[in-house]
Length: 168
Image (cartoon, rainbow, N blue to C red; front, side, top):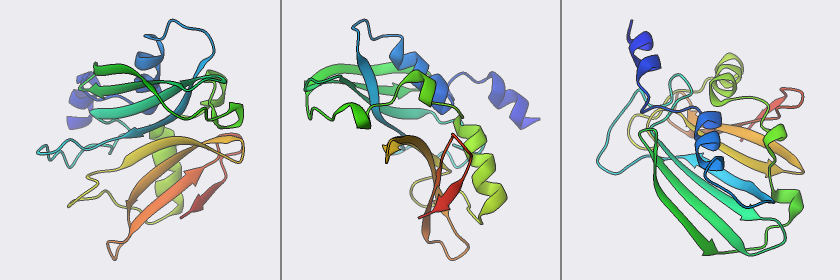
């Protein structure tokens, strides 16, 4: 089946796989994820992107604790294509995400979203499903974006601690 072929296609990564790929490049201590999101790349229309929780393109922003040092990564097709250190906000400990807080992966987040809400993959922009990881009120939540039946943009936030969810 097509799913089996895609499973072997290492251009597509889950959120956790993308995180691990970037995190493994960081050699300094006390560098934590601030935010990450899947992305579309201009000119590439892959309507299946995200249907199994995997995406070809990811952007990640890490911050060294109590500094303005940020490490920006862009991942395309399973490889890091951009890795730069830039100045940015000292975002503070309460906004930074540790490994141990990433409790569910994007495919699990998508399953929870699909089971509880009418959420469809985007077909004109924000193609497929997109995934984000951000800290809200001290909890590292995975968000899944898609569209409802009327083609309104929808975002589901999932709390990985108790698997509660809310629609934005």
